[in-house]
Image (cartoon, rainbow, N blue to C red; front, side, top):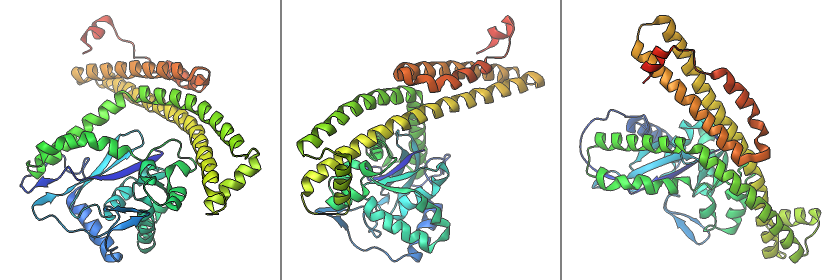
Length: 388
């Protein structure tokens, strides 16, 4: 996983009602566990009072204390996603968008080994996270991730913050936007009108089922999304590379050494001819991120194929086990059907990627060779007729 993006959704509040949930902890973290974590953090750290400011902007999320709304039980949800919009984890907010909430989600998602943690107030959150990690050794692993200020929010913050923290300037981030939660929140917010009057249990179960359905749709169309993104990235890289050469000529910054010097001047906050130098920085960073994005997408396509192959292998092994045991004919038929579907899906995905990549599709050769060993087990005509 390249990046995790976290943000709050204040529309998913709920008035107080009782009940118990069937899917507690599956997608939405258990309230008692989150509360214990928040209490531990707040005992260990001094609270950051008031509103955070960056440039001319004030961010209500950039604070550690917040009054609790008297008429509401949950005030919303903090949600974390990967860069392709798959819902990973969420928690109920009871004190506004305090920093302890994304800190909990970051801790829970560390096993995914994401390289970046994206937020709309990363410049305020990251020093807080590092302070928490210095006090609590169990959180030290979080510092191995890199901060990522979501690209659109970076434009509303101080110029110096944008240069240092913006995702567009982070090496290895590709074209990750860090705004994925904002995009998915529009979908989650559709539940707001129906969930705010539900019992706590019904709300939790409904949101979990909704998240599962969302992820299933994202998974079904992942090969199309990656392919489309690769084609667009390749085309845009050519356009932006040409634009960079035109800009260098226009600003009389033609040599690579001069470009490097101008970029260093901007990062070191040198003031001479700053506007022109920042234009060069922005265009150079854009072309670098686009080049990185091509490599990232190739890696993600290969990872997707490997995952589908592993699923097919697992189903094939299960079919073999059922053939030996012969204890449950219905289960055996279901497993054969699932195995056949997995093979068919792998073939569709491989073909989609080959079409999008063209000459660059040579890396898929290994995946196609591996697929040849995943053919369905031999079955008689009678058995085939019983496959559901």
